Image 1 (cartoon, rainbow, N blue to C red):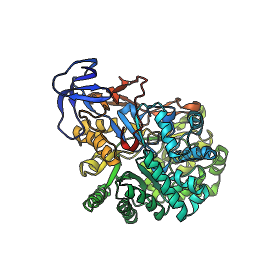
Image 2 (image 1 turned 180 degrees about the vertical axis):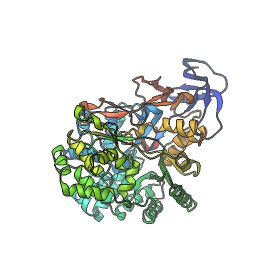
Image 3 (image 1 turned 120 degrees about the horizontal axis):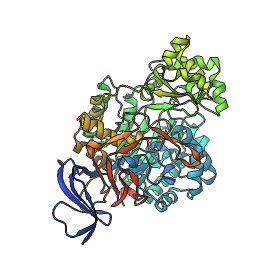
Image 4 (image 1 turned 120 degrees about the vertical axis):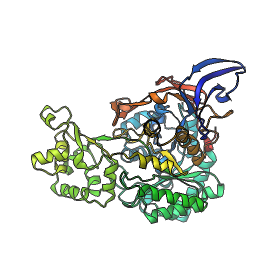
Length: 581
């Protein structure tokens, strides 16, 4: 026998929580042919993994690579950081089903809510758009080159718009006939290989609004419409639901939690709940959610909480910023053309509303601030569009400048932005990350999964796709709050189980060979904090990236996709219909 790859002398962490052990692993025909023992033949490629971890590739359950996968088969930056499978169609957003005359509007929807550049989509995705229905969409993905494995939810916003029309989907519940048609289309999509459906429901003041500032279709979706889709999964006894719901400032709002329980009861299927809230000061915030998850499982309801793990900052300018959208005044100020935004930001009445809403401590907006850079008065001016006469502001906080100039810090923010056509760049300090609380989400509950990378979205603001490397560096290696075995179990096996992904997420003989080889002590992210700007998107658009260091080899279905951090150009990824393949 001749093997394709022999990984020898590695420290195997197989994803099942079995204690690590030193051993060899052989790959043949895309599968793990043997673990341990003596080889039954030679190998075409031999990798000496002495001192390195050999583990299953990570599974990223929450991404928005729906557009990017069409021009970047490897879904970077996630694949740089050891991710070998990604799930598309999260939060109810996607590009199918979609009638041909709605393609442009469908792409426009993603410009604000997930901050994906329109020109990148026009040039990178639109020429390859050859689908209308979900079966056609999945067939198109199946034909496309893939550097990672992909799965997809039914994006409920797209489904509702396809059946009801955009205006109706945003303004009223579905009729009985429309519900039956949506059920039929979900059945059709599940038959074709979807793994369930997804919804974002954040209310009228959604933190992720449509391009015109209005809520996204599912943000105000009624319960009965959602339950109608859940009945499809119950009837089939397959699939899962990805849900993002937070309709007020209380992350543990009893009404929201009760709805999630009811959805689990109606569907009879797993729910992936985004996200487990974490306060950096008050441990009861996350502990209450973990206690709720535990009770749900005791009651026979499969609800899994997904949490954030990455320490990241935000750098942004007001020409394309959207993550203050839960404030109606900020949403108004940052909606429209560049000229519209600048005109509104000069308006004294709107400025007064901005000051009032920003300082209201009990709003969702105030809580969101903590997640996107901390209090705005602590934002630091990082760039001034090369204006030499403004260099004196660089490195100073808005609060400091406000004190020096006798102005309100928001007036400083707006005035500096207007001086550069809204291109003044601000750096958010972010909260002081409490590793005990963030790691406690996983160490204190068997029902939680790390991730929520939002990979492919908000790429001008932050780099969530680096979460796997950061988790291993921070929680495992440096702070020792999680064992290596526990981290890989959460990142791979448990994620696969919750999402219905078959035969992946663990290293075992006969399983697909999604394998990473890395040096734990070598892991680094560069640049740190907010990454670097690169102009590598279609249409000359830019994004922020963070590179991974320490990953020596990454295999997808037994084929090496990255070696020493460099892409091999191979595209062995697969569309995992029904979570299999």
